[in-house]
View 1 (cartoon, rainbow, N blue to C red):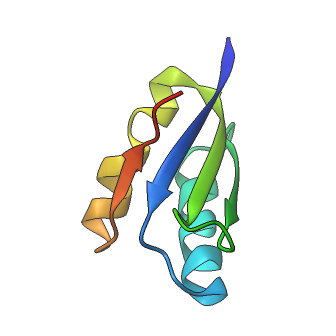
View 2: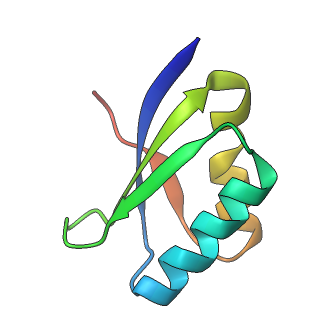
Length: 72
């Protein structure tokens, strides 16, 4: 089952966002993801299975970025 999860990040630039999206899409081919860098929380929205999505924060941390789930 696919779910949507929203994360708060510290991504600042389009270049960082593009790099991280490529990393996510290459690591988890069934995930759809996009950033909203205009939002004060630099939001990452992800759609996919929980089995894949649960690894996103660790992936960002490994690459020097913060990533935490936003509460509903």
